[in-house]
Length: 157
Image 1 (tube, rainbow, N blue to C red):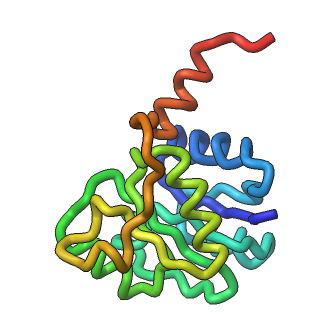
Image 2 (cartoon, rainbow, N blue to C red):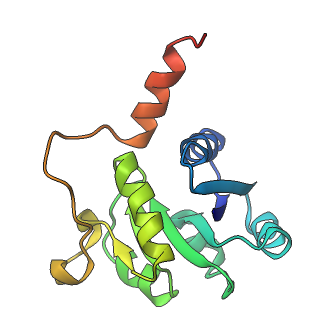
């Protein structure tokens, strides 16, 4: 089981990512934090395998020193210079929040296997063969926010 803590300012994003990942059989959200201090408390008490961190936390507060777990950074928009800043913090991955849900979950699994993962949209003139996440051929998939919102529109029962 991959134990995950998520640190995100936006409550709906925090809830959406948490709900999506909890649907995976091999993933469990063990904590959700809205600020740096709470994230650090959760990491030390829950001992997760992975911290998913919003890039704004990273840019505003600086890197979190959490050698005991892997770090995946999420950003809303690709911005010039962000990839290098994320890599300089020692993060294991960097994705956009509107990535397809399959990209998020497969990236988490690859991170846990020791592979660094970077969205191709964020490469900023890097060599794609070194960082790009492979995509399965086929139809375009909805991003995870759209998917969870669609599920919320339909009553259960």
